Structures are given as structure tokens and as C-alpha cells.
Image (cartoon, rainbow over the protein chains, first blue to last red):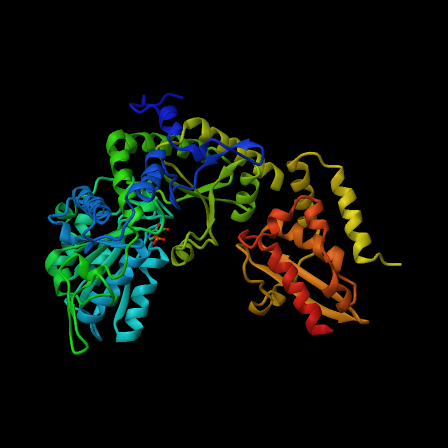
Length: 411
Length: 138
Ligand SMILES: Cc1ncc(COP(=O)(O)O)c(C=O)c1O
């Protein structure tokens, strides 16, 4: 099998991820559940330990040296993320607990204030529940209508149908940059331009995109962009909401509390400036600091190099899995990241998951928090292998052999 | 003479002692799954679904001469094999016996990892549901 030679030294990279070097059920671990969360490299783990060992203090307002240092590192991370996203200002970078909170923040603030009864919100048929339920809750509360962009058999968004859904009534379009179940890369700029023609704002769920694709929020002209650090070699429970400054300024605060205020009296409270207006309470300082380290790590490897390696893995795996009798790949978009979802005739995905786990291979099975998408394909769920920079073709060979054994045992 | 719950458990433990690798064990469970009769479609109702499983598992119980008889089905074959073993151990005993049963065989045959709450095949949920039936029929 001929593959493009890698610029990256994968064995060296693997050494940065201590968790990979272990046995599961007596076999060397093959970790193919990267779309759920990626593993963390030693520099990221060390950054968290370093923060608590040397720099921990509550940020802002502190006069002493530690508070100064913690604040500096915290804000340095904001600057790094501004550059990572191509945002114009650090005021546009809001720290959250993850993608889910970012979407809920926008629904609760922008949504409550600017979207009203009779207005419409458009989402897509391949959304994660976290980009469905907050909008449903808002729609129910305010009498807003929710519309859905259909998904083709290949797993791509039907843009013609999308255009037909658009009208002056549409106030917001929210969809994922990359589908976690199918791997599809959606044409963000095309959708944004169409939506903007009708004056609708656009939120893009970048949870699955940031570790594979270069993001430039200004070039894409998105109004909101959200992602989670943990899918990008960073810590869990931490994420980012990007929003255009004028929109964020017009939005009411999300949570009330410390940090987000300018002045509090019992009669009236004035709110802090961006981005602090949306950051009530003591944030997840250590993990914010460590996200910067994760970005430096992927930058050092080269984001194009990572994408090239993952693409090679995707093609290698796709070719091999297609050879397996009765196996059907769900999600055959022309533009895909390294996510491979599949079903096998007559076999429940849970059985595949259990038997692969016994062979040391970690894949995700189920509906992947996209039940409506599963209904669209008339399936209960899939088995999903998703690849990251540290995965190898040898591991894919293990998966293929594992699947053959699994099928033989179940038939 | 029907066996006691513990006699059946010991019998299963003995059967599993013959297997020395994971694949043999699972092939046996898969085989048990295939052999479980299952339930007619009309009985696979929402009420009978056990929550907490990644696959749908249906469980039903009825009382016959003071004994509880279980029926179960699942879309996933390994789950079906596991539930088949539970039925073999518990079905045909009194609600009190079932309620009091200490299911040590699961650990002894090396399947206790499936009991963890985090395991989405929900063996723990199945056991719990069987005990709830036992309580309800007491
Ligand atoms: C496309 C997509 N959106 C949103 C989420 C939710 O991310 P989090 O759980 O980190 O908030 C995920 C993660 O599973 C995802 O894949």
C-alpha cells in the first residue's frame, strides 16, 4: 500500500501522549475515539500542573505578584485564541465551559433579546443535540419557528433546500462546521453569505473543526463561532465563544455575578466591558492557560501537516473498510475530516463496540448525540472510528482485523 | 427438581471455567443470545424497555404458581446472551428468592465490568429491573 510520506514523525508524536502507551484487555490500546475527545500531550498536562504548582491565584483585581502572573497567562491565552481564530480583537473571545455553553449563551442572550414570536431559526439535519435543544427551548419559550436544512444520502447539506428556507423572517442560522457523526465539512462561507443576504445572523459550531481545519472567522464572516478545547488536544470543560464585537455589545449578559460587573448598588448594577461581561465568576483558569499550550503544540507540528496525515489515514481506512462485506459507510461527503462512521448488515453497533474493546480498540458506538440524523438515515446508530495526529496505518490494520474477527464471531 | 438460584450460578461458573480466552467466552454468550427465544413484537412496548442500555432491551415478568417467569429480548446479541444467563438463574423462582439473590456468578465469570453503571449495555439495569419485578410481585 503506497501512502504519501509523512512529514511528521508519528512515533515521536506518540511519545508525547503517555496515555497511548498502555494495554487494554491485554492488547496495545488503539484509540479511535478522537471525535469524542482527543488525548492530551505532555506539554498540556504539564501546563496545568505548572499553573497549580507555581502561578495559582484568582485573576484580575489582585495586586500581588501571583495574581498578576495568573492574570497575565490567562489573558495571554485569550490573545493566542484571537490569533488562532483570526478574530479582530480579544474582546471578541469569551471563555466558556465548552461548545454546549457557548450555544446556550447565545440562545439565552442574543436569542431572547433579538428573536421573537413568528421569527424563524434554521439549523441543519446533522446537528449535535447541543445545537438543537437550546434552540428548541428558545422556540418553545418565545413562539419562534425552527426549520431544518435537509441532509443528502451522501451526508451533505442540501443548499438548494436551504435557499428556499431563507426569508426575512429568519433571524439566525446555526449549523456545524464539521459533522461529528459523518465527518462532513460544511461550506461555511456559502451558507454565511446566503444567510446574511436576508439579514440573518450565523452561529457555527466548530467543535469538530478546530483540530483539523484552519479557522478564520473574519474571512468566513461568521457572527458566532464556538468550540471546545478538549477536542483540540486541550483540557475538558473549557471552550470558547467568538462573537462579533458589535453583536456581543448589544447582547444582555448571560450569568450575573462577580467579574461581569462594573459597579453594583442595590438600586442598579452596571455591567463590565467585553469580554468580561460574559464571564461571571472565577473561570477555569488553569485550563484556559493550558489551551494556549495545546494551540502551540498543534502549531509546532503544523496544522497542514496534521490535516495531511489524518487525510491519509481516512483514505487508507475508507479503502480497507469498503472491502468488508456487508459494511456500509455512513457519510460519504466529498469534503470530510477523519471520521469514519459505519454500519454492518445484521449486526448491532453495541456488539461491535464490545468485541472491539476486547481487542483493545476504542471506537464510539451509538447515535453520537445526533438522533435526528440517525433517523434521517433510518439507522439506530453507527460505529465510529475517528483519527487524530497520533494514529497510524498499523492501528487501522488492527481495526480491520478486529472487525473481521468481530463479524466472524457474530455471524 | 429445579435447581436453586445458587446451584444454577455455580453451574454457569463451571461452564465458564472451560474457556481460557475472551473470544471463547464471548462466542458462548453470543450463542446464548441466539438461543434466547425473545419476545413477540407486540410485547416489545415502551413500558417493557429497560432504561440505561445503548441497545433496546425489553423485559417482561409474569407470575405462574407463585413463581416469576421472565421473558426478554434485545437488538444486540451480547446483551441478549447476558440477559439469557440472568433468566436462566432467576426465572422460575419466587419473588422473595429473586429479590434476595446475590448474583455472584457475574463477577466469577469475568463479566463484572459489564455491571458498571457506565457500561452502556446495562447489565446492572437488567438486574435492577428484575429485582423491581420481584418486589412488585411479592
Ligand atoms: C459537533 C459537536 N457539537 C457540540 C459538541 C458538544 O461539545 P461539548 O460537550 O464539549 O460542549 C460536540 C461534542 O461531542 C460535537 O461533536
